[in-house]
Length: 255
Image (cartoon, rainbow, N blue to C red; front, side):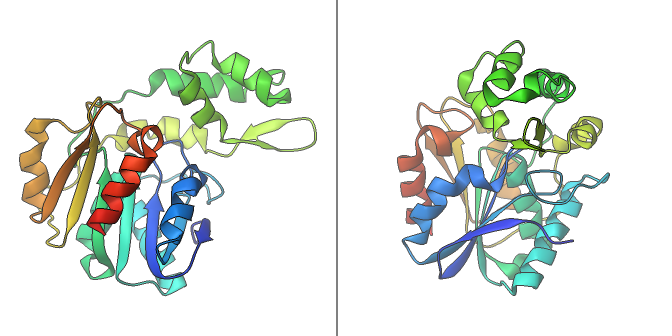
């Protein structure tokens, strides 16, 4: 099965992988900007997310293979690859497994280390929402219901992009929630320490985020010898959404 993608522009292939509970469309505004610089931008939905296939199996190796299959299907080579958070781990593993396919790698606010599970409240809220028929009658109702669990408006807006109309009166969630809840511990897994990638790599972190710490530099540079670590100040984990202008500037300078 081939991953669903929204392809924008023409030129050198640039693939973008979203984070946990996201989808490719989260990146549409930036993709349109990249497309003006002669890039063919592929906004992929990873397995169990967005419009891509659902599977009982979840691992970074499988998601790297999904991307390999996509590249073969679309006859893509020498790609530029951007991955955020969970998508960043997929991108890192893909780069070390299939270095011949990657020209430059950009990893957004994630390190190759282990991360403890920290999405419990979000998953609890989405699970409750998916089982509440009244809350799924409209987007306002869904937002009001989810606010009992998640106070941050921006986080709710991000999560509610998963909603779609199952029929004229009922909303559903595109994300494969049961599998992601069951496999949540694997989302934080560290990447294998014996792998390496010797082509240019850019690691971008948010100055107000705690996902990439100074103490993580050794692990990054050990696996990615030509890596550069850049901090965008005063933004958190969703730095590409919080300061898209600076994010775009850093990415284009690297590419």
